[in-house]
Image (cartoon, rainbow over all chains, first blue to last red; front, side, top):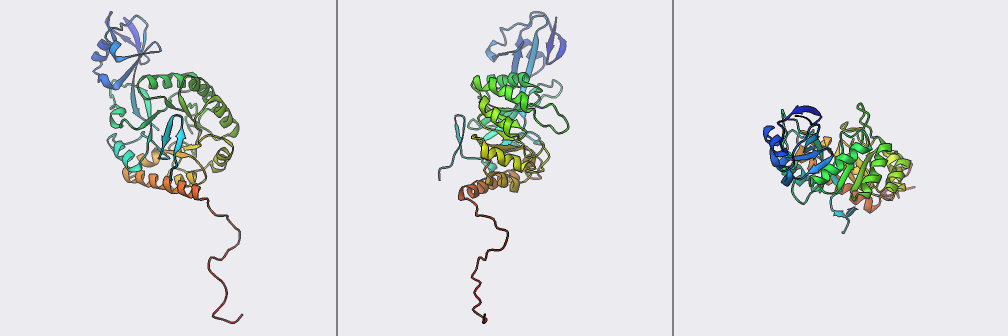
Length: 66
Length: 257
């Protein structure tokens, strides 16, 4: 199933939730922000938010900046 | 002496804001904040690079710091608004530095799109601090749109060239009834002192500290320069004159006039 992750088309297993995607990317859970189709998803809902075809997922982090 | 800088819902003792970009090592940042006594710190948001994820900046910042996420990367108002909302939802608080840039050579901000973003974000409960090109009309429109402070550039970002826009910033200080914070371009503590001495409410410094040989010592120097500049501003500098005005008696008591 194709979704967009950080601007790139990505193939994910159907019925994946956000937590599954984060796990496959080996990301540290406490360090990231999830925006799905323009809505922020709180960490407690990552495991019950399922991805659908053509979803737009942004995985964001806070870094140094001026 | 009670001399606080009030912005939005905060009362600050320090008039030095610090940017956290370009540091060779994030572990320097807590030391820089401590030595400079800064209370407001900028951060940025980025898409995670799955190849080389960076460390989470927030783990290096203490709870009592005021976070000011910037909207760097935004090319128009709607992108800036989206970044601001993501930052707030991510626990960065309600302060935001609007930074909307279309010009990659000089990184000069787009005042027009910035005004649009301020209108939306101020109504949405943000404390909005716009990075801007020093222009009186734009600054007035930003104030009307709900900005909490105005942040004109001293020189292009990262150039360490100082207060090249001094005259224009002076006009903003005299005409705009909001804190004027010089953001970008300040390269040396003497320039920070100069900005505060002429009435700027604060300065935002990043590159000058991050790229110094000893960032922690340079941060301390900036903190002291800003304090000195503020004291000089409050003390009220004496008038300037074209010709000499003797500081010692000139009566010639060892010779006959």
